[in-house]
Image (cartoon, rainbow, N blue to C red; front, side):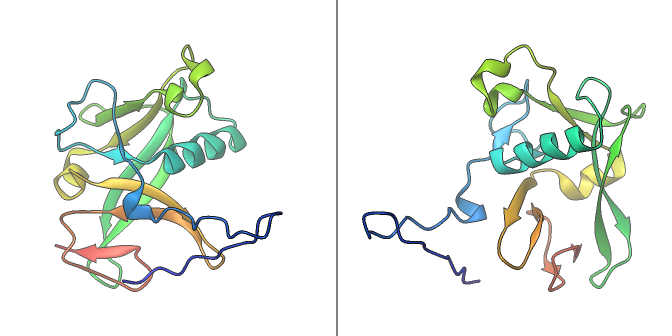
Length: 159
């Protein structure tokens, strides 16, 4: 898949570097997880967008988190679901990401949490959640190692 990057001229006339493609973004591992763990990882871009969306919805990281899961349906068989939730459910896996990744002065702030139910975890383990913002699209991007086929818009997949 080819990516097209928009370059803008700097005041000196030199070209600015192209934005970093989603796949090249470093993924953050949840607090307490080992680097090689098969959990959910996020890019700093996605973590920043989650924090901004939670603030817009008046949800503090201490009072809730982002629920990521899958549902049946969609063009390719399974669809990603993403929504805010107030608390994790009994059997959820909870991934906490320290806000110091975004702002070194936010060391005392509560972590941003991601909740994943056990059924969804089977399909999402090892996934990287990124956020892409282009001229045509602003959306979370699921980089899922279990996906063998996906639809054109990237919102559904099959394994």
